[in-house]
Length: 369
Image 1 (cartoon, rainbow, N blue to C red):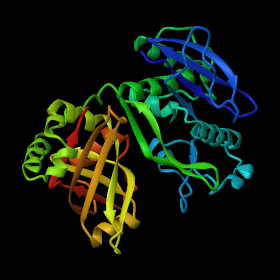
Image 2: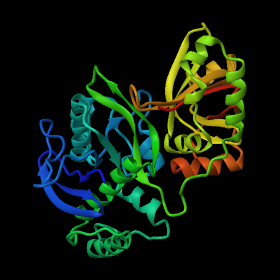
Image 3: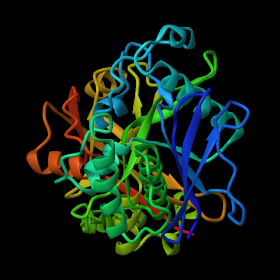
């Protein structure tokens, strides 16, 4: 198993608790995080972590918002964030914690380090939705006892955590492990770098899927039929780029769409210019669905109801990709079955959505190594 790491971030002036996880066993440590050393060094005998999940906000809201979509969807206590770095200095609630997260994630971004954001209480809600979580402040011993008992039932072995910070570090490591094995959910919006401010904007919060949130068993028969029809009328150039012998089969396509929570959705502006943005999606009954805020994307689709999407992973020689394009219907609300599928996949009903977009493809290409 890939080594993963979880960090319960404190501040840049205090120690943060760390849990290293490999093959179901974990070890605990501490380190003082900094821009120069955003991630902890592995313990003796352990290789570097493939992914590290930090309990700290990775970015500021996009312009015009006071709260990130991820904080809203995961229901974190971070309610209001400043619009720029200058505002971090005067932040009172969780100020040192927020400043640490912004600094560490930006430093990791500049260094190309594999980091994720998570939130221990969100992890708990996904894994044990029936648990009334004890207060870490009022009942710290009970918090440790309740969570440690459940972590042991998951098969984890290691030194008994003695503080809620150590428990939270282990929960963060579980989020990183779920991300590595493809069993994680992610809420929020993909992060993007604001180079002028030297901060990330938005960002997703990851957590393991719960016991009742396994693979959706997607029915991709409509996409497979469309894939065959698309290849039959494709041009020679398209077939050279999307050779039929490299197309995904039913199992591969279903697993790929279940594993990838985000795609790039391209629409056309009123001036006919392409506009592509990363966005979360869910697939059901032959259509891709998107929860959308009001803005340029929605205006584009109301003027020109056609879009293309790309879902991809990997790099040269080992990349997988789905390309779909077709008409888009704009709905005021999602059908109940779609809303339920979205909640299982992304952890919320997306009550913030100004509209729901239904892309029912007319053309589909897929590619596997």
